[in-house]
Amino acid sequence: MAPWGSRKTLFAATLLLTVAATLVFRRIFGQNPPGNVTDLYLLGVLIVAYYCSWILSAVLLLVSTVLAVFLLSPLDWSDGFQILSYLTSASVIVLVMALLRKRSPVRKNT
Image 1 (cartoon, rainbow, N blue to C red):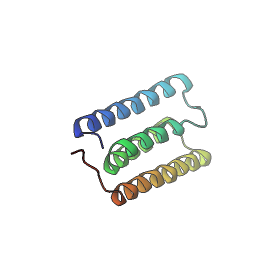
Image 2 (image 1 turned 90 degrees about the vertical axis):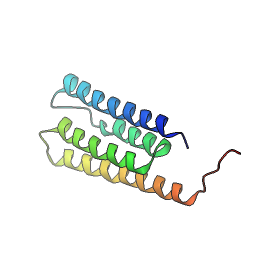
Image 3 (image 1 turned 180 degrees about the horizontal axis):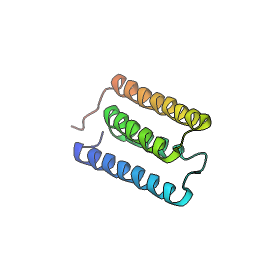
C-alpha cells in the first residue's frame, strides 16, 4: 500500500478531475450529457478504491453521485435509473475492495 501522503494526493487529484469533468460536461453538453457519463466517475471510484482506502472511495462515491445528479438535472426516470445503476456498481466495487483488503495480510519490506 502506498504511503499516506501519496494516497491523499491521489484522492485529491481524482476528486479534482471528477469535478472538472462534470463542469466540462455541463458546459459542453448542457442539459443533454452523453449516456455513459457516470462511467468516468466509476473509473475514479475504482482507482481510489484500489490504491487508497474504502473510506476515501466511499467519499468519492458520495461526491460523484451528487455531481451526477447536478449534471443530469432535470432528472427523468432514465436518469434516475442511470444514477441507481452507478450507485449499485460503485458500491459493489467499494465493498469488494474493502473485503479484499481486510482478508489479505499487509506485507512489510524488511
